[in-house]
Structures are given as structure tokens and as C-alpha cells.
Image 1 (cartoon, one colour):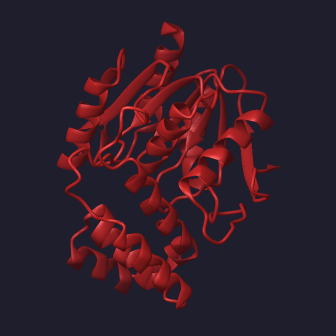
Image 2 (tube, one colour):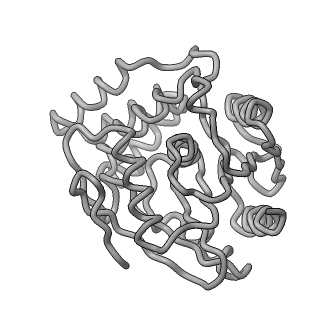
Length: 260
């Protein structure tokens, strides 16, 4: 494990495995670098150097009160610089949104692989008040309630399923990531009804989604692939209900790198 200091002084942890073209993995909500280990291993087995990292307020990385989406973009840029550059960035869920934001700000991402990005093209989802409510819960020491609120009101998990997860201790296990729910909410809000500038990326882009996934993510993925010039859509049947299959995703990435 290594550390890099981001632009605002926050320490960001990262790990790399394998040899070959460098692919930086950007996790989605309520996950750490450890959750990307199976995907990193599949990429390494396919001849890729896979870099995983803890986004701020997660795992071994630090944090700063009031962090913004621009801070997370700077974190990704710092990781890319620390590892000597990237041939590609593979982002899943809100990690795909972060990768796209970074590329629109001309962070040298290399090729983009965007897996089921939750982009609210029509502006019909949650608004900025959700981030405020989540921060209030975190500040009050109600981390489990913040996670539950995020799952219910941001992700759209039914209340009964969230309550069951609370009863079985699953939300308590996610409580250390409560602050990151505020940052994921702010990040996805930044891409709500995205402007032309946010969709202005020069990097070759592949949008990935499962054949069976949540309707909102299916629509958002297809629409993003349609509006990004030159982007291609790849349906990955092995990835089911917003869970990217490591081996199948690695195949898409290595194929995309060979196409460049």
C-alpha cells in the first residue's frame, strides 16, 4: 500500500497489482479498495496493472470536513500522478461519475470504462437537501441512520429491505463509511442533468452495463453512451443487478485497450 497527498492535504491510499497497461479502478458508494480486489485480480490475470484506492473518508484514506466533488477529482488526479500515469480508468456506479467528471476537467485518465453510472439526466431524482440531511445525521453521530437514509433515498432500496439490513447488522458494518455517503450524494448531484461541459471528454469511452440491472441504471447507461461522441455501449450479461462480474469486466477492459 502506498499513500499520496491530494491537493488539499488529504492522504489517499492506493495499492497496485499485476503488470502491463495501468488501469485505475474507482469504486462506487459504500465500498472500499478491498471490495475491488476481485476485479483487480481479474485484471492482473488478464495482463493488466490494476490500481485500487480508497476514496476519501473510506478505508485507509483521510478526509477533510466540507469535501467537494472537485476534491475527489483532485484525489484521482493525485493517484494517477503517483503511479506514473494511467492507460485507463474503470469506474463503477458513482465511481464512473467521478471518472467522467475528472476526464471533463482534463485529468489524464486514458481510456474511460464507465460501469452503470447513476446519472440523473432528467433531474427527477433527489435534490441537494439529501446531502444536507445526511451530513446532519453524520454530525449527530447517527452513522447507521445516515447509511440507511442514503440506501433508501439515494439508491432507492425499498424501506423494508433497508430495515432488514439494519436488523441483521449489515448497516452497522457500513457505518464507518457514513461520511462518504455525503460525498457520493454531492458528486452525483454535480452530474444531475449534465451540461455539455461535463460531457465534453476527449478520452475513448466504453459504457458497460448488465443485461439485468435496475431500470434507472439501464436507461442512464444507454443514454450516456448515446450522448458521448464516439462512445460504445457494451452489455455484460454476467454482471447482474449492479454487480460487475470481475472476469467479464476484465475482458471488456482488455479488449477496449487493444482497440485504442
